[in-house]
Amino acid sequence: MIRLTKIFDFEMAHALPGYDGSCKNIHGHSFRLEVTVQGLPLQQSGHPKDGMVIDFKDLKAIVNREVVSQFDHALLLPQHAPADLLETLRQYSERWYCCPFNLPAKT
Image (cartoon, rainbow, N blue to C red; front, top):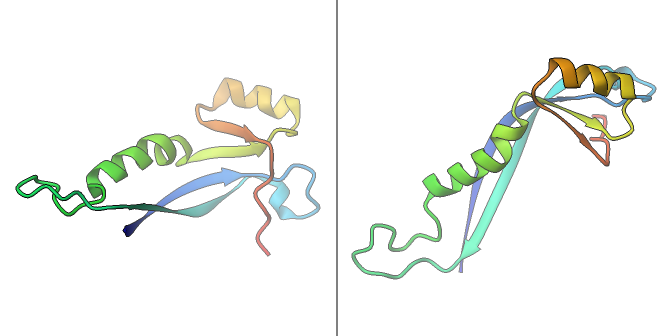
């Protein structure tokens, strides 16, 4: 069994509405996503991917399509964000998401 890890970096903004500190304001962070795959390497002599669990090119394409391209330079807000803010975002921003949790404030 072989495990491979690929690291992806991206930038994203968020805010903590109702927080009692400066993180209540929209601000950005650099995010690091570590993706680990585990499996048995392909054992097909002469195959161009012989000895690979996954081609890094394929892994990068999947993660970039499913995660990085969605969240890079996007805004993430909790579902309880004020309705007027969400309405404004619908009109003026292409990439923003609501989630059922807050990203923790940095301490």
